Length: 347
Ligand code: AHR
Image (cartoon, rainbow, N blue to C red; front, top):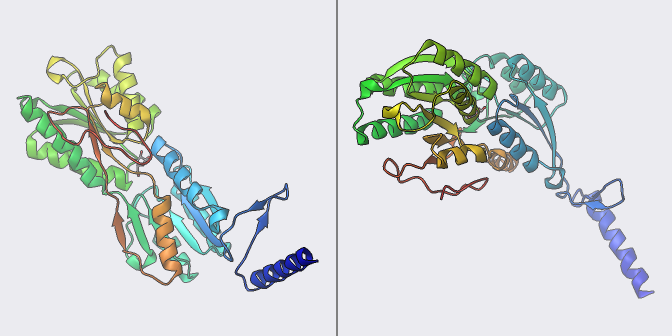
């Protein structure tokens, strides 16, 4: 009797709480309860630019594992497949679906004004993540979180400058090629600018700049062709790790040696990201001289922004992520050993 009374009271409390929107329990197909944050369903439309690199996969994973049903989110994912037109279509779809927030990882910087004006007119906050956008009116997006790509490039070029000086190499004997990322993407613009500035300042011979689209396949193709055209390349600046993998394959296929002893005919590789364990392995064994980290774990950062907006707060307009630098060469840098929350330690 007593048991029956307790059960009845519990049911009444449950009905009352769920009626107030305080309690919400969802049940999966096997009848098991799925945890769900009480009383909310925040709908987020995420337009991801594509799946070109290991970095991008880690970024997508970070978003998907952050915005779960259990945390009270409905996450709509659209893959732009490297095309801005697809991303614009996705944003229009999100507007029609009346999502609560649009999160955009833009493929390139320009060309967003019209569609973001449409989102603004619909009253949907837009959060930009990873790469930046270049719009006339900054009120078209709520805020941005991502990397300082030019700073990453400056770290890498500073490393090369110090390596050259410590090893008493003449700056004019640096014959460098740049395998760029997707042309017009912030990551490409910032990293390319840093290299051009450093080449100018130090008198390095910047032989060529070619697009590699942040992919291994394109970089391999470009590197093979560069090796056929130029026989004096001794440094390859790859604007991400996947490009570095492609460049290494091409160099080795051409019978040349990848390594830091550029005075002895080796070809040095400089890279960005540091997401993939293979890249870190290459740093340890000297195939990649250094990597300026680009951190892909934006899910929790975007979540913090959304939660702040939910309670009426104002996030910073621009938030730069702190990033590390990896090199196994202790003569050049003290920053060799570090542990990242997604990754690997260089012992
Ligand atoms: O925008 C970040 C860059 O995009 C990463 O460096 C690269 O790997 C990715 O594709």
